[in-house]
Length: 241
Ligand SMILES: [Zn+2]
Ligand SMILES: [Zn+2]
Image (tube, rainbow, N blue to C red; front, side):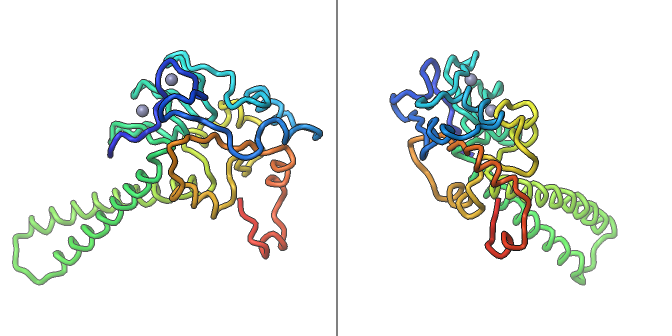
């Protein structure tokens, strides 16, 4: 996989207009959303990280000396900060982040399809009425068992990443939600960056821009709305995360 991770260049702030690195805030997330409301403790926490009117939080990566945008994390293997950091893939030797998560999903999908097709060929071979030594059959059965384990792993991985995509989360955020400051006080089953399944999917598949945008922050009212339990009316109205 090509190196397409959004690494932040060294020694320049994330809000710099220099070159391809240009981080902006989407929509109306600047402090306006929070004024006049009764912000929750979570909102206060986020406001401390995103002072109104600015596009960066007061968190500087001590390794790259850049001001880290939200959802970014420094990868020690790649030695750079990665936007919307998901994980560092040891197999690919690269980080999975904002710009290549979609390619990574398709990569898993293609691997799964390839393994399934190989399994079908194995079964067809075993079923074929060809005279051959018993040990050849034994090897084929062993390979088929190993392949089945790989297929199960790939299918679970594909399902997991599909869930992340549909809810606009990353593996890092899901695993470390108790440690990441802006996710600590989020109620369970609330996805703060989700814009609904359809929009999440569209953004994931179709939105490509040289301008790296920061995620809009939900207001406390939006969070409360997301935390509201589902009713029959919500199901009829196709309310999604
Ligand atoms: Zn860094
Ligand atoms: Zn990495």
